[in-house]
Length: 195
Figure 1 (tube, rainbow, N blue to C red):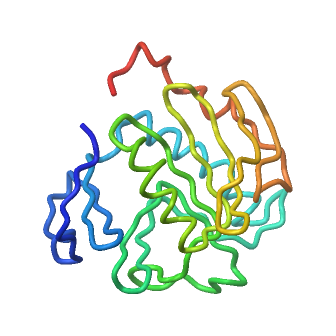
Figure 2: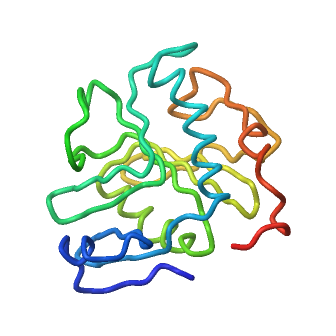
């Protein structure tokens, strides 16, 4: 299943969808997709487990970040999105609000699946650049690759690409080395699971 588009996107339309769907509204269009599968959720969890201790709690790292899974973000009261994982520097978002966050994230991570890959790389990527997200990571479940991008002069610059068996310093969380092989330890090879 792929992302579906409805040109008459509205907040009411998004809220009326069944709980089995995820929805985002960008530039007046409603995009819907199925809920993530178990492999997607496992990678999302592994990423958060890696980042929260040093960057959220300050254990072995600098702290100073909010790291949230699938947060509701409303920009200019007309766009509603939910990155797979997103982060805000606390100097820009001192406390978490009740309800939706209205501050543009400093960092987002999207985990590609067949249902979201084209949407993530075309529509959502250009939207993130337009609203000023500074760093964007893409994790490809099929290739087990992570791409790190930085926004420079309104355009995405690819900073690095990491394979599943690598460790590295990944912007903007380059204060510590991140162990990518650990993320994949509980995930079966691609040919053993359905998309």
